[in-house]
Length: 239
Image (cartoon, rainbow, N blue to C red):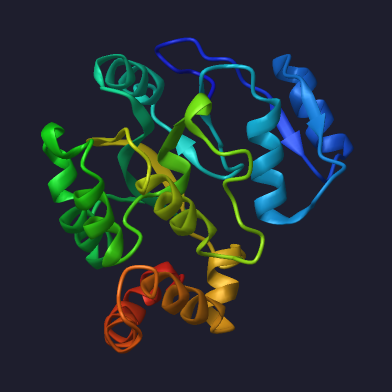
């Protein structure tokens, strides 16, 4: 997040403090906050949001990359939006040294998000829920949260992979706007050691995805949609 065209405040939140983290933070003059409460992804993300003291907050994953226009694009979009809840951007994948701007999964996600390219739909709860009812097209690390609009605990620790999708479902019920910036402003790294990849290999994601689809559809329809959705999971594997 360093090197943004618009200056931003950065802090480090971790539940596993070590010398590498502290030396890196010292190098860039960043404060370090240690989560001594609930661990795991949900606990860590909740803690990160709690220590942030700015109106807009981005939870930056340690291995993702942000283009220099990310912050300026988000701030500009937030300033023009009506009652924003989250602001998020399009993204590309980082696979090893390669930057992948399009593949099957990215095409599907962009297709699902197409309605939110229309600013008049940003505030429509019906449109947001229809977008989310067919899958999770919002890239979690591309999201900036309007902190004042968030519930006290947004992330559910009973999810290991779909906790971001569940968060979007919770927020989709609120009055306000999901602001989509249909421009690539960050690179999401795909690698074999990610939690998403592990859960796919262990079939954990299938269970969670079905649980999410049932929030939008009757059980038998949810099962049919999940069956076809499952094929997209292979895009997260390194080949």
